[in-house]
Picture 1 (spheres, rainbow, N blue to C red):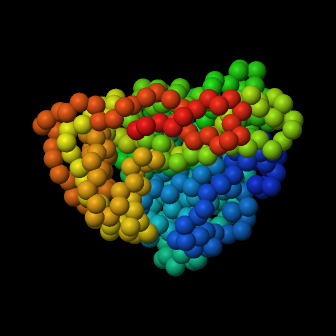
Picture 2: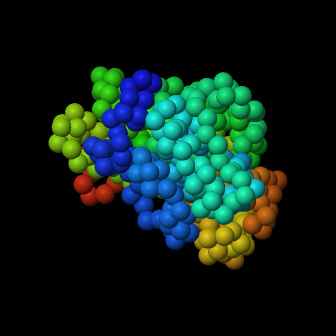
Amino acid sequence: MFDEVKEYYGKILQNSSDLKTDACCTDTNMPDHLKQAMSKIHPEVAARYYGCGLVRPQQLENMRILDLGSGSGRDCYILAQLTGEDGFVLGVDMTDEQLAVANKHIDFHTEAFGYKKSNVAFKKGYIERLDELELADNSFDIIVSNCVINLSPDKESVLKEAYRVLKPGGELYFSDVYSDRRVPEHLVKDPVLYGECLSGALYWNDFQNLAKKCGFPDPRLVEDRPLIIDNTQIEKLIGHINFYSATYRLFKLEGLEPACEDYGQCVIYKGDIDHHEELFILDKHHHFEAGRHFPVCGNTWRMLQESRFKPHFEFYGDMSKHFGIFTDCGIVLPFDNDSTDKNNSGARGCC
């Protein structure tokens, strides 16, 4: 599939208007600080953007960030502003045409950001084989990706390589496309469906199990939306399957438990992360209001206490006494469905 994807994103697609569905389109209200960052992006870079979400993890100052499937570099250049000049963003992509656009405008963005030197670089390579780029173990604070992992024919290798290069306590924060059932093999082989980020999508429960296998035992869903296939021909082929754009964060923390276990702990968010002073969102079910006690399970405690977020929280309790399961963790479709759901097949996850 590598050659087909290169052809689709390098030659067939020239800008986002060439897409046939909204799978590779961001349908999220952009916060003001990201709008300001976006205003400094070169128009050619912005025009060749094919993401499905906003890769916007909090607290990025001075971080080392890796973007898997960086394309024309739009997300890299936005993140480069959020890390500051002392941070660093590396984009990896396999498509020559996309890399040419990204590299062409490095000097433009360095000047637009007011930096003395660029804090962005791009490398040609495969996100399944980061070792070939000599990326060292434990070398990045954060990895992001935007509607790219679904295009990989070897998703397990992508997640394993991401785990390898992440620092302990780091996270893989990425948006991608998922399905509510496994996509039949004959549709996976369709180059248009694959290029449109549909037929390469993982069934959501297969993704969760794969993430756990690769060292991320507690995947956290941040946000999601159902996709609309506004194309009659594609709808006929694949319309019996529901697709979702979803953002997950996966923390590299050894020993996380497979369920939400209650140890009587709680945290208080201090409200001191830029652009998130009133509310810090860890995931879809953990929204921390500043100054308010918030009971958390052992895994959530560790995600906050053993990551870059530790200075921004007060922690109460420890792991010395276990009170049982924290909440009823049902295995159901975690994404929200609207009233147009064809199969009425999902419900919200409870934790």
